[in-house]
Structures are given as structure tokens and as C-alpha cells.
Amino acid sequence: MTGLSNTALPLYEKVKDFVLDNIGNGNWPQNGRLPSEHDLVSSLGVSRMTVHRALRELTDKGYLRRVQGVGTFVSPPRAQSTLIEISNIVSEIKDRGSRHRAEVIVLERIEKPDEMLLGAFEFTELRPVDHSLIVHWENDVPVQLEERYVNPALVKYYLDQDFTSGATYDYLQHSTPLTEVEHLISAIPATERDAKLLHIRERDSCLVLNRKTWTGPTVATVNTFTYVGSRYALGSRYLPPAK
Amino acid sequence: MTGLSNTALPLYEKVKDFVLDNIGNGNWPQNGRLPSEHDLVSSLGVSRMTVHRALRELTDKGYLRRVQGVGTFVSPPRAQSTLIEISNIVSEIKDRGSRHRAEVIVLERIEKPDEMLLGAFEFTELRPVDHSLIVHWENDVPVQLEERYVNPALVKYYLDQDFTSGATYDYLQHSTPLTEVEHLISAIPATERDAKLLHIRERDSCLVLNRKTWTGPTVATVNTFTYVGSRYALGSRYLPPAK
DNA sequence: TTACACATGCTGTATAGACAACTATAGACA
DNA sequence: TGTCTATAGTTGTCTATACAGCATGTGTAA
Image (tube, rainbow over all chains, first blue to last red):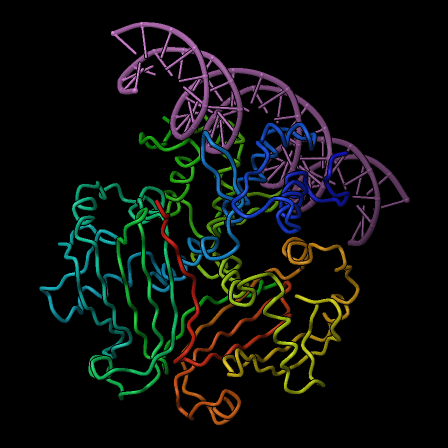
């Protein structure tokens, strides 16, 4: 009596389905503890690596929460799940084309040189500050307003890191203590300040992306990106296969 | 000479970094072919499972494209990459709270009963059509306009599926042929139609989420969600840990 | 009582080996 | 020439085993 389905899926997919079913029908309640890997190995009759892979993938998708030395728990259904993944939208917006291109352009156009952005995220040579307002340009047309706030307590941390290893972007992906990200995307009419800086009329539609990152329980950074609604959209484009 | 970094990362993370470095510095060109797993095992001195995990995770993130029996290739830098993941935004928006709740509410409020939505995605009992316009309400206030187009050729496919197995949501996650998703989020002023249906003024800011799904090279569905900008935002909230 | 060491149970990582499934290619054959 | 077949190479999955790292409870000693 394995409890696994009979379809042709790989074993680890069947294990995932088994777990999701038990969560879905309330068998394993929210924040409840799952059987240990060893228990699942015994009851399902598969190897531990297979169980482990299934649980790891469900953890990546946000269905589970695992703590080494303690156990595996059912995550509450909302929020937490896709947060990290959504952060990729922002990455995509910022580095369309080559990796650091967009940011370099920005640097040449900064309106107030005194208010430098915290470059630790994308660039090494910059002096970090804890608050900045930046206008991004493209072909002499302002397209985006960016406001950044960085928790001063964390600035030192970034300065102490060694970002000269070349693979800055990916290094950060792996090693930063930024554990969670919150995103809010909204459509608001341009304020007087927005209109002036972006060369549009007041009340024109703007697309606002608000991003907040956390390191554990403390807020690390807050970013507000304001786009000219009539000209720009967020998102990602899919190119269908040629053949 | 392994080529792996000396930091304290797990081996599979080092392999990932190694691969990303080789992609980043142009050593392995776009659409180029990577060394086989066996080659990497030889040159890096780690086991094949470790190499495999690294390559699989990079594939999931969209950096690589793998074809069984052929090889591993460098994906073009963006687009394909995070598309699947981003689709979760839409899921979360639609089913905050319990799984099918949101959709049920919608059904009670449909303005034109003749233009039913294709329920195959969330509900079994509905008659599918290939095009529909829906107004979503909350507490007697219209909050969202939804326009759906479904490729008629695919309607039959969904009808033939067996969605009565209980785990509808997860079943679809695994088995639908929807291979790719394109999202565009934009801020637009309300058209006359939008204003009338959503009880707002013309030119008021609206948040528009456009979603297009593909099965291979053909478009499967097109959804347009129009939200009242002053009242709603897309995104996800993070709740910091209590302790 | 308090502090520390240890055992236990859990997840995380890594390996070696095996087989399955798929693709492309080369060669045999009609 | 065209078609089928065998084969080599590649990725996908699965197992059994081992060890590391972490958290918690327990028992011992101060």
C-alpha cells in the first residue's frame, strides 16, 4: 500500500503529488509537520534521495518549509511562496540586454551626483548612501523614476564583501542574506513631482513597482520604480519556437 | 585543476557558479553546447549526480536548455527564463484564500450569462466558450474586468481531460501542455468601456495585466485583467518572521 | 539548580553505480 | 536512392550508502 498514483510520472513526481494531495485534503494541516524523510521512505517504498528531491522541489515552490535538524512543515498557502521567484521580474527589467548595461546608462544620467545609489547590488565602484532618487533616461526621454532606501546598518555589510570576483550578479544571488522580497505593482496618477521629473502631465497614468527586501525580520531595502504608463510595461515576453 | 571556487558553498553551487561564469565571460556562447555531464564529471572531479543537480537547477532558472539524448545548451539570456515562474503571480491573484473561492464568487456575478468562461482551468461544470468578458465584484463594487480568449482548437482537449480526480489544480500544474506564458503589466487610462463597467471615470488609472499562454508554437489563451488603479495592486506580501 | 557533554533524530550534501529513454549517426540492405 | 537497424552518446531517473550539520532533549557533573 504505497499511496502513490499509477500514472507514468517519475517517482519523485508521484511523491510530490502524494504530498500535495495530503496537504490539499487537509490530511496534513497548515504549519503541521510532515512525516520525516525516513518515514516516507518506509511508507512509500522509495529511496530517500527520491523523497528528498520531491520535498526539496516542493520547498522551492513554497509549499513546504524545511528546517535542518527539526523537520518539514506545511507552509501557509499564501504569500511566501512565489516571493523569491517574482523578484526575477525586477531583475529582468533592470538588466534587459546584457547584465549591467541598464545600470551603466543610469549612472551617466544621474541628476544629483551627490545622491549616489547603493551600487553594491550591481556595481562595485559606487559610494553607497542610504537614500537616493534617480531618473532613468532613454534617448533623452525620461522613462523611469527610481527611489531607493537602504537600511544604513546594512551598508557596511555590503562594503565589506568582496565583489571583485567578476560574477557579481550571480554571487549575490547565492550569498546575500536578503531572504525575502515583497512586491507591489500598482497604477497611480502622476503626482506633481512625478510629472515634472518624467516630463508628463499630472494625473497621467504611471506604473509603480514597489519592492521591499528583508534580511530576516528587518527591512533591508525599499525601492520604488515609477514608469511612464503610456510608454512602458513590466513583464516578460515569450518567443515561440521557430520550428 | 578543477576550476571550482574555494568558498564554503556546497559543491553543486560551485558547479553552478562555474557554469554561469563560463556563460558570463563568453567562454560558452549563446545557444552553444556545454560539455556533457560526463565531461564535467571528469574535468571538475565531482560525481555525476552533483553535476546533474547543478545543471537541472540552472535549467529550471532558464539559463540552460537540455534535450535528452542530445546535450545541454546555453539559453538566450532572457525571455524563456522566468516565464513559468511568473505565472504564479496570476495564480495567486486569482485564488487568494482557498483554491477555487475566487472563481466561485465570479460565477455568481457574471453580467452576461451567455458568455460563460472556460472553466476547465478551475472548474469542471462550466460550458466552455472561446471568448468572454467578465466583471468581478467585491461587496457590490466592481474591481476587475476580465477578458478571455481561448483557442477553440484547444477547447476540446480540455473537455476530454478527467478533472474529477480531486487534485485538479496540481494535476494541471503537471499535465497541461501549456508550455510558456507571457505577461505584460501596464498602466493605462480607462477607456469609455472600462469606465462604464468598473464605475470609474474615463482616463482614471487602471492596472492591466495581459497574459498569453502557448502550447508549443500556437497561442492557447489570452487573458486581460483590468483593475481599478486607485483600489488594487498586484503583487505579493511578505510577512516577516514573528520571532 | 545550573552548566555542560552527549545521544538522538532530522535534513543537507555527496558518491558510485545502474538502468531507462531519447537522439543522431553510420552502416547494412532492398 | 531510400529505408531500416544497430550503436554510441547523452540526459533522466533511481537506489544504497555515507557523512556532515543542526536542533533538541537527556543525563551527568559541578
